[in-house]
Image 1: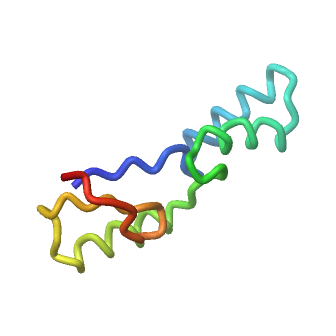
Image 2: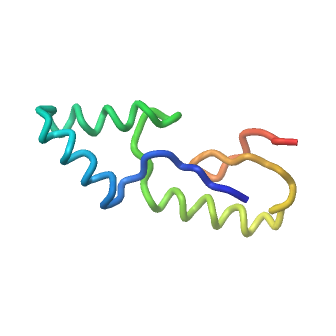
Image 3: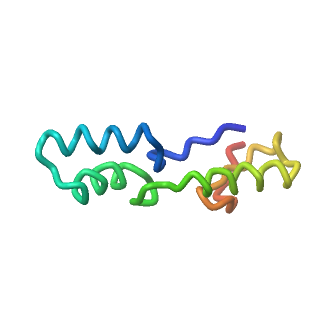
Length: 79
């Protein structure tokens, strides 16, 4: 299984936001710029990724080809 959450609230994203702010954007505009690039239109929290991983592991369906969203909800079958 592969998890591709998009921009997640981490130190790396914080540094990217700071770099964007250094180019003249406010924090709110810099964060919104990254959030808009995520399918959900917001920054993903690390806990959401952990919950998704947990859900996948507990489902014991690792080979099924199911696709999950950021909240562990099945959103499609990739087969």
